Amino acid sequence: MRPPFIHRRAWLAALLVIVPGIALVAQRTAPAPLDKVAERWVQQTLKSMTLDDKVGQLLVSSFESTYLGSDGEEFTRLSTLVTKHRVGGFHVFGGSELAPSVLLNPNYASVTLGQPLEAASTLNRLQALSRVPLLNTGDFEAGVGFRLAGATVFPRAMAFGAAGDERLAFEAGRITGRETRAIGVHVNFAPVVDVNNNARNPVINTRSFGESPALVSALAGAYVRGLQAGGAAATLKHFPGHGDTDVDSHLGLPVVKHPRERLEQVELPPFKAGMAGGADAVMVAHMEFPAIDPTPGVPATLSRPIVTGFLRNELRFDGVVYTDSMGMRAVSTMMPPGEAAVRAVKAGNDVVLHSPDDVAAFEAVKAAVVRGEIEAAQVDASVTRILRAKARFGLWKEKLVSLEALPTIVGARASHALADEVSRRSITLIKDERNQVPLKLAPGARVLYLSVIDYPTGWGIAAPSRTFIPELQKRWSNVTAIELSDRTTPSELELVRTLASRYDAVVVSLFVRTASFSGRMDLAAPVVRLLQDLAGSTGRSGTPLVAVSFGNPYVATFLTELPALLLTYDFYDRAEASAVRALAGEAPIGGKLPITLPGLFPVGHGLERAGGK
Image 1 (spheres, rainbow, N blue to C red):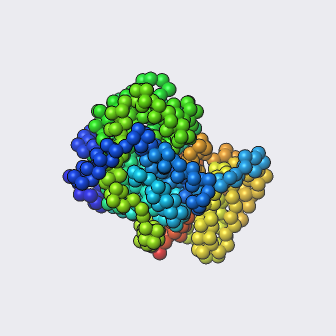
Image 2: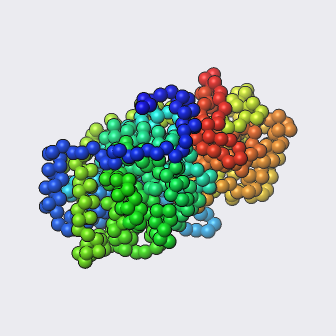
Image 3: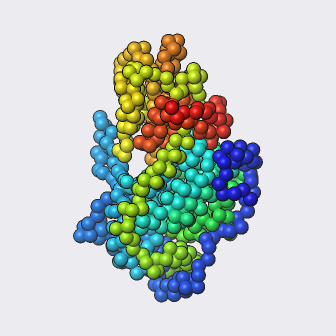
């Protein structure tokens, strides 16, 4: 057995030659058993429950973690879900603002970050109202800071794949686990164990560790162990595998048409490895898998052959099974919330997550149990799993968190330092045809900086280049910064094309998102043509031209003319600061591609630079 942490290059080299179809046998398919006292609490609680109590446990509602006063309509709604409808827990979102739907300026952002203390305060007040402790969830794939301001935010999973170090994945999981528990959340909907082998995947992409099942299995396993060490539950998602699709399940219903043999080789090994490692939960995808359930138009979430027949009976997983958000259009446009909830429970899911109408879901599932459409024994089995998960966290003894202790845990300097290390080590130099990385420029050199974004809408949490520009100016004071997008006019593009020759260097940042509900992941064609022209003109003049890709790494496949390109696999301040340090030669560059760039470079490719000047 390979030791938990070994040198990156040694194990990465080994992973690259492992046959993808590793037949991992899930020897351990459930979390560790409870002690006798905790198990007694589970059985006594189950015995005391009414049908309303049991049905409520199958539902996880949600709220936004901005300030929520106790004497307000929203908290009243949430408290009613606890006291009347007996919901089993709450999912913690960030925040949002109202944004108008207008034609001439569709650039207003609606998404904001939440606040750790507000989340913890709301959860504590809801816990105090609950007869059965709440089991709360969060979507903290990139750390708690991915949703809540001030908490630690880590680079996307693909950056961990590029860094290639299980220690980093373990520590990120441990830190995330500690911060998750500090705010009163118990289950993290991570890691993503989808194997991203489709360059046009609009929803997984950098959320995946990479395209090698072995690499994904190794890093996801380390992350699971880290979460558990930090005290939180891990969730493997999106079962049976969302990596090879070109449809966003937030918008439509993807179909994976591969035969069962291919699923066993590529999609399933990371799930089997995670189950063998004792992962606490699995999230089921809103996708069709005809090789497992040939019924047309039925997503895995609503498929009994997939959830019960395959996940439960064949793979013998006995942890908690969550649906993906029932508000996603792959399901929500198919049927009303009540019917969807009934279908999900009948399929074998333990928890219906984030229904568009929790009350309708509650009433529909209860009615289905009463009329015998859903067997009472199945409900009892699901409730038992949920109660056991709650018992593992000791919630039957203490269900509140300390608001005083939270600031000492969430957002610590050591945690941010680890995130910095991951970001630095993930930077991947895939091209440097003119040997211009790092940039060799005098402090007073004239630098043209082009901040190239996919489209202006939705940049509410962090505006592109807000860190890159000031960091660039610290090294080279004479910087001209211009933003380009699909809304840039032809005359403006022509002006940039003309002015570029006046500068000593051109630096380009490419911001291309794979954002849920957008269905977009490209640059506008006129902007691409401008970059191609600049590549040609700077080649003739000898002017340095270096580009950095933020987000979708596959952008390199339609900008092959760029002479130098670094990948960060991420967005926001940390990635931008790391990229500038790499460009300036202040940090080494050693990341390796965890994916294939079709027609360009294979997995494992990456140029190295010593850095550290």
